[in-house]
Length: 240
Image 1 (spheres, one colour):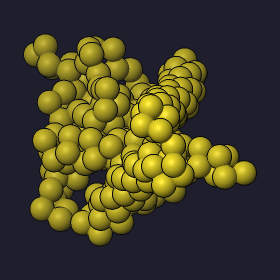
Image 2 (cartoon, rainbow, N blue to C red):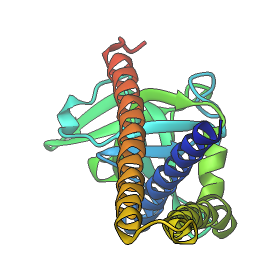
Image 3 (cartoon, rainbow, N blue to C red):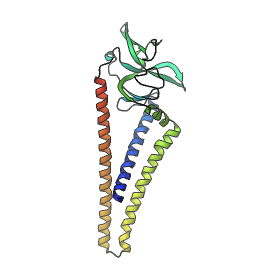
Image 4 (tube, rainbow, N blue to C red):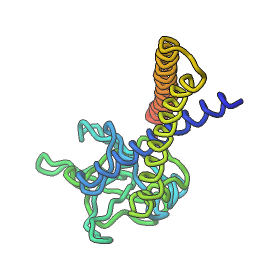
């Protein structure tokens, strides 16, 4: 029972660390990319209004991807782009559907509209303003969580504290190994016996760490594969 709890605690600690590192990467990449987080060409964005309901709703988290060729965009695609509006000192990002494509003097531009709006947007979207194309992935309500994590309080509660717990947990395990190494001396064992026990304790500790790390990486890999499969299936669906 104790061994099972120990393994469960180690796995949970690794999951917390991996989660904290991913969020940290997203936060830092957003600071370097005009407030847009990016990971492997994918950009998680929080929906700030209900203009695209029922496709996605305010507070949802959607995933947009970088566009390799602007000429690949078609009417019906949903794109994320910068607007001229300002909120909290930053330009506002909109994610609306393309309803018309214009070609003037070799320059392509786009007319967009929210699915829940009665009229087209009053502005024209030029290629330089486009951030990415929606992949079809939507996580209901998760956008509020991401928005909270980008605040100082959210970063402290969900990132720094879990990382501190992880390192304290690992430090505790190391101390326990050292304590176990000293116990044979009190039991009257020979020096060679003590050295053998120390060697085994260290080997068991390192083997356990490698096993837990491999299990955590395997679970993370399975999650990434499932997410990629879902995104690929969404990309292959015909646009209405």
